Picture 1 (cartoon, helix red, strand yellow):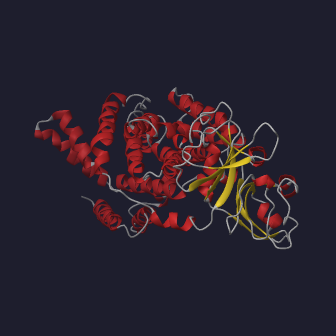
Picture 2 (tube, one colour):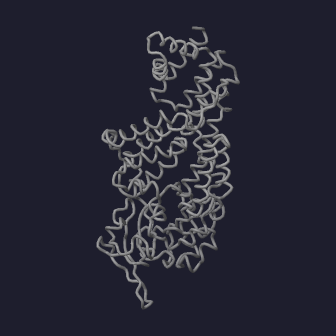
Picture 3 (cartoon, one colour):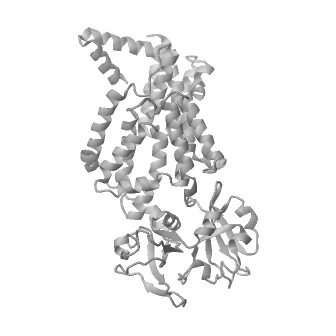
Length: 497
């Protein structure tokens, strides 16, 4: 072995050891390894920066923007929920994840699905940890079915082209990858789910119980909730949200009658359900099938790229005190839609638009990023602060996101564009079409993952440049002497990898 290959091997061994200790983030460890090889003159600056010019990290960054648009619009929300609500949720969910992962790289796919799994688990009172690791594994298994299924396939394909060989086709590896994926999914759904530990996130739940908001939603006529009891509809078992009462109007145009929301209460079209819960669960009600929040028309007009949630506390001297949201035309005057209200003594009840506001009431407002700047120092509010929870999903842009995703897959699959070009085009479409703003798209990119991939590619280039890769390849080639032929080479290559 040459001196450079020995140094590279030593750096790799130390790198793996540091990664196993789990004291530093992988990106720092890998970048440190590349830096050591650079200053040891094993590689030069172009090799050290080669990962930044590779197409795979940039492709993943573009796909993160697309994933952000999927999350912001709730494009796959109903799909995920229906899979998890099926009779065999683990099998259905992992099989569907693997199928989608065969054409969508697994890193952004997990970024798309994971928030939906967590929110579904919160609504159902289930344990999200039992589905998150199978989600990761299923996406990896699906990634071996086609060339565009995972970033590592793309890296190998790029290296093959650089070596002057014929490029791989999208489905060239399917004959091997599909059986592996099927067996893996079956194992995940049967044996695997019994091996997963129970993990409960206690701290976030305790923190969010401190402040509860109220929101009212109407039962949609001809919707799935009409004629069902509160218990059968699932409204009684929502995690983090409590159905406090049901308001029912009659034909006399009198004020609605408030009914106790017992499990046996039968819901009718037009009933107004008043919920109490924390911010994240209140926002989830906008996606509940069969319910329409009473402020939906205001919220829809406020939705769009760049919007987020804010908490605005009504000041003692505010003109809002004693007024209702309707009487002050809050949406037009303040440029935001009130989605829910919190009151310290919990004495609210009824529809938000008809509740006289008091000093100290906390309004959950959906508005653009400039809301804080406009009203932070205004006498109407004693405090205006952004909320970390995501805003309600922009369902009116789901068609655009679906079209961009399908277009990307088809353009890449039929070779019209390479995956990098197709992914960038899809990202441009969802940003230009208003599914996600430029700032939201940038925030959706997991810089840590992209940077880790880039420095890992640089480290791989260092292994090749130093001669270590040739040394390993020679050892693999000698496996022919064992008498196993080409099969032996494949087995040894897999073991070495």
